[in-house]
Length: 305
Ligand SMILES: [Cu+2]
Image (cartoon, rainbow, N blue to C red; front, top):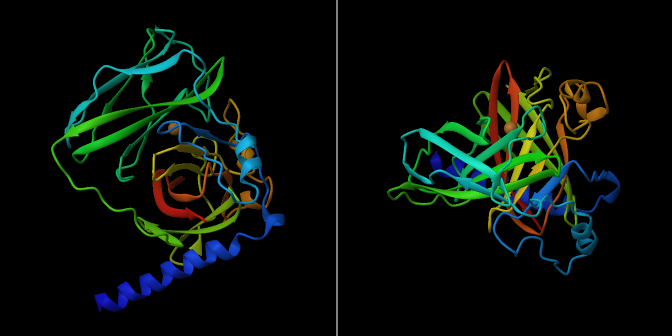
């Protein structure tokens, strides 16, 4: 029984890989939208290598990367945790050594904090509170021993940017291998199907949320959009935060931006994103959506050929 299921899964996975490769030819279906996504340096100078594949050079040039403005740094009070033992986590964003105290709202929040284990498991999307002195704090738990990366996605008068730092939960726990690409994943009662069309490093990603075979027609706005997507490159945790198509984006609550504009925003239709990847390779995608008051996270492995 188990063998049969595994083989079916293997076949499905192989089909998904084939589909991604085959779909990568329809340039007309792509609507690139600079400004709705960003790439931040997640692991050093190797981000965004130019590979000898058609279109990549241009794509790389167009990439509105969001490195931090000059002189910005993030500093945490502590980076040591005990696995499974939540504690207060606080940090400051410094500009030339002085704490930044004024931030701009993006997607309804002044700051988005993404925490993920280095093996791309244990994803968390949190919103710490800002103190007057520029200290951000939140209660944070790291469920398993190991290394974690924290991405701080925010904006000031100098523009949006992302910073990162690493945390450690004491003890040892083996890394989980990156799951193979799959055309669908389940979270709670939901099935989320991914339909991806890539040309070079640009891709249109459509996520269809359904329950019991029926599309969910009443996804609720979550931070002003029908969905939020964070993509991490498996090799070095380079970070892409992608916003949905048909979403006005920008500084304030755009609850209407996702409802009723364009085919993607129709009730029951897929939540669609235009993304540009820094390179070919393996990525892990985390889609968050809200339904019946609860936020769900669906994770996918995606390989850009
Ligand atoms: Cu957020």
